[in-house]
Amino acid sequence: EAGVAQSPRYKIIEKRQSVAFWCNPISGHATLYWYQQILGQGPKLLIQFQNNGVVDDSQLPKDRFSAERLKGVDSTLKIQPAKLEDSAVYLCASSLGPSGYTFGSGTRLTVV
Amino acid sequence: GENVEQHPSTLSVQEGDSAVIKCTYSDSASNYFPWYKQELGKGPQLIIDIRSNVGEKKDQRIAVTLNKTAKHFSLHITETQPEDSAVYFCAAVSSARQLTFGSGTQLTVLP
Image (tube, chains in turn brown, yellow):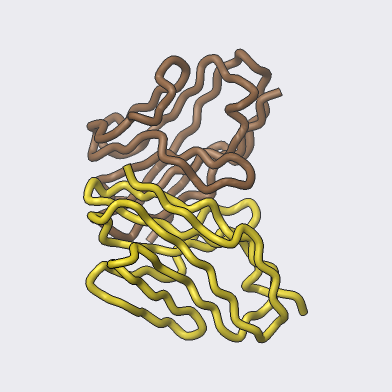
């Protein structure tokens, strides 16, 4: 089966600019996650979707981050405006049930 | 919420030796414990997992043990090879189906 697709792979922006990341999960996976992985750390959950509804966004900095999952398939994560500390790899993952999480290769964001 | 602690942060072993990575978790309701390997520039890849009703699971050179009473689980890699060099993450899945990661272990296998 095809994996979790993410784009772009890399993005460099200046602080205060905006950026968007896209994720296409594995077909049929109802649950989709966005994680932030800062260099040298484990991934940290930003938001969890079940179909097109938000299950948990308690760790999402809502003053600058937003995410949507229209039609319960693809998802977009946006940052506006970006800060230097947002430099990280943004990982998308999907799962069918309570196990079997599959991750994409991530988008490496550098804010300068 | 769940909190996962992982040790050590770095581990160097000679090729052919064994490597052990240990994790503890805080939420007694967590019931699924996967281990991921992450290579440079790639997303985490599942290498082995264990459910709360099992104490040990083995897959070739990799094994995982779980002690639910102590809220402790470990990854064991035997006969290590240079291609085992990577960052390894433990994780725990809570009843809310959220995956919480440890801080990672950089494993280096020296030839």
